[in-house]
Length: 394
Image 1 (tube, rainbow, N blue to C red):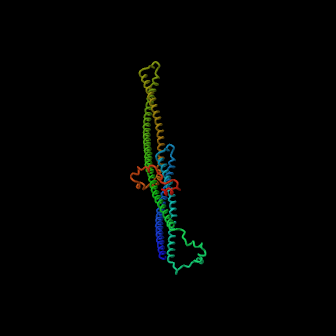
Image 2 (cartoon, one colour):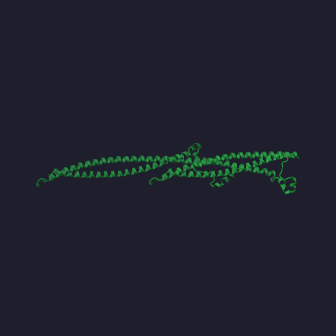
Image 3 (cartoon, rainbow, N blue to C red):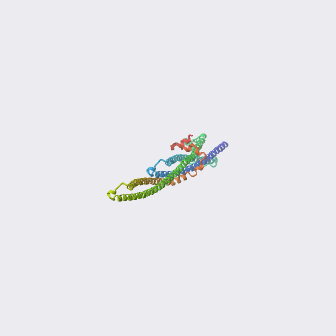
């Protein structure tokens, strides 16, 4: 009888020790997964925080570009890229916050499962110690029991004998620990998939942001180059107009000089005619000299009218050139203001560069041909409450 009892004690002790070791191993694995999940949560929170400053910078630059003059408020590629960048950053924050919520939920589940494992392991350790103590109880070293709990007392009160029977059979006893370990393994597997998906999500969002950033850099450089080209061409046209105005002034001066000479010649011809008109009445004849002076005066008047008309036309052309120069100078002023606004985006571009710095090195050579970069794909469900359930039922 004692041999059978000792054999049962050793078997129960070995089983309890095995279960305790399994529980400890599962608890260690659960703790390791909790540490990895905590690191993943930190990475996700850092990714979320890294989007806030770029989002504010993009919104500030977008608002600054809205202060352009009315004639310069065109829907250019830079405006489109800024809108896409804001939408991309907001989508990244939404997805990362959903992933963080799922990670926090799974971390709480891991904490609960680890507490259950530790509690079960503690119970197994206590049971093992009690079984070891019970094994060494003999007739000579019986412990002192509480008053009224002896054999005669239990026989007189049969209801107290129920304490001698364990509430669970061996199958239920082992199944309880096995169920706790199996549930823990499932949660650990779900957390592992969630970590992998979260890191993949962070990489995909970085790739999507980097693609928009590349487009923004290209379009901004093109915009600045176009504005500079327009300013340069406009300033060249202003120089040409001013040169033409100088030539017009020279021609006007020459015309006025010629007009003065013609008017002087007209005065001489008129003086000659007036002097010849003072001859005696019998000598007032239309001789060749009289006709020559009349013809000369007529030609001088006609030439003076032509020169005066040419001078007026040149003055009108100069006025038109002056108005054109005013319009061109206004254009230069508008473009310069637009260029200053584009340069005001340096802080935003520096913030975005810091966000996307190093992303290009992580992308494969054929990343530009991946459809996932052309259109963001939601890697996690939008409903945060169902994320854990979705992963658990895959």
